[in-house]
Length: 231
Ligand code: B16
Ligand code: MG
Image 1 (cartoon, rainbow, N blue to C red):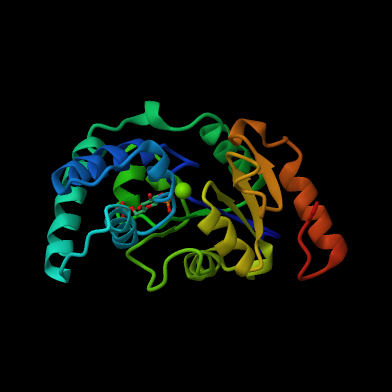
Image 2: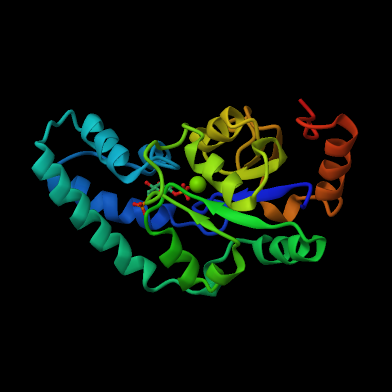
């Protein structure tokens, strides 16, 4: 058994699909007469599709029936998918491919842990689907982040205890979910926003080359459970 395994969030860590979510939500917002800005879009990061609609309706102080909501969710996703189908390998974020190569070299398995129900399609578009040992996404969970369910299922795919898993996440809800799962959380993005993470980096190019070997050796030193912590 490997000492540790890695769980990657998708949007904001592997690719930036937030911009496509924004364009699709913006179309719906205009249709409903709701003011919706890029700053508002930040609130939708890491949050499930239906929760995102609830946030949008909350911004507009609008109440809709379940039927109307379902129809809008369908429309929004159809528009979002038009952007997704145009994605290619050039949309993989900096540092991703070399980090996956590094993990392969170290023999550390990695899976996906995303809120998106389109995760497998997106990974296929950018030619990364086959590299992951497992995919856990919005189709496999009953509770959205910050509930730890998505990452705990990820640990099962890795056949590792939760305390031996390292999570890369760009959203507060995801960092909270990783911490709740007792995993080592690595925040990718704004350090202040993601201050609850154990480690912070602006992007994946900043991960030190000895990061995983240090995590493994600290983990061994402290015995289970005991991942390498700096705060
Ligand atoms: P979908 P992640 C999340 O992906 C996005 O950050 C979030 O904005 C989106 O609402 C959610 O996926 C659901 O996406 O509509 O494709 O099911 O960051 O958890 O990889
Ligand atoms: Mg994300």
